[in-house]
Image 1 (tube, rainbow, N blue to C red):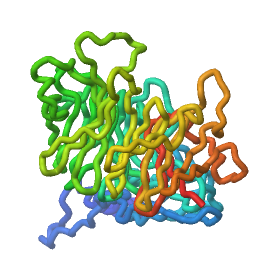
Image 2: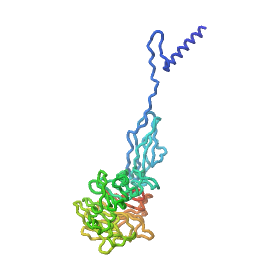
Image 3: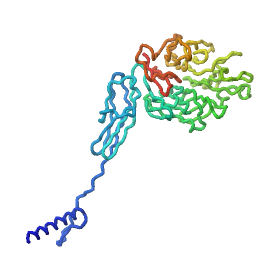
Image 4: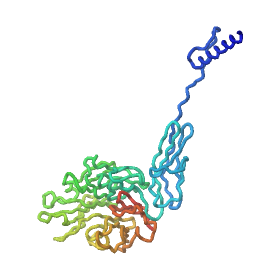
Length: 450
């Protein structure tokens, strides 16, 4: 009986102790001893994964490998998963990822990494791989996806609805008109695409931007093929992205427009030189001249000097008709190069015209000058007939007038045999290093020539 009583008492003490530890009742005894301090039984919350250092764009030569890294912190075990162009890379589960040897076709690929622990997950910034070397590679723009809206981003992650004309600004960025989206996009040398002007959201609004030119002090000029006001065909975009309309009369400097002697023209191309002059090409018709969809109107190119002067530098004469000017470029000596129904024509400072490449040789879509005075041109195949010019090849005209093939996607140099080659070029530009950029087919290609 004594043993049972002892076990009861001990059991009661044990139960009381358990209740005390659980915090259900106070601990203490008849001897007024101080309550026992309970240990903190609340678990500390885990810290979620946080990225402290983001991956960065990697630029490597063709044939080398590229390494992307991330620095992250958080409680417990961190787990990593790298992605390439939106697809998980099997086995890429460390804080860094090294590619196999890359080719020019890999340029523009987009990498990111997801980091997670038991408390949560975080995804890094997306960055692009840039592969350097002679040949063709994607700078920006993914494959055209019907119904997909324009998307800012980097490399092949960015999307253009219609990659139109391009120009290179003084900072080395490309400016592009995304015609169907009524916007102006900017592409950095690293392939980062942002929307500089979202046409439908601006006042005044771009309706159908067709051509673009980079002026001095960060100013951009854009032509507009369709606008709600028939008196506005061009826009000026300041360095702070403030957009202003340029009325036709002010743009073309022709008093006859105000008196109704000339039907308001359509601006077809625009260019700017390093001295701050702007060149505007337009198609005009005078009262009494035939109006038809298949008839060319008179083509006029005017030079608007930085000093406010206006000079006509090219015009169809008498009753002759010259095809509309679809692209222009100006060299440091003031020579004007135009694309029209004659092909590529050069107009020197005295107004003398020389045909450099005939329209019967190639269907020329765009031209661009480099710093050394070489003129490049992008082509499309003729419709329904043979062409003496290689299909879709990029041409080069030396300062002495010699014409040659600069890059041929069907030629012997495998470095230009790109599946991403632009078959419907809309724009052409060069950079300070001599690289070419071609826009069209929803993307921008970078070409480094031999």
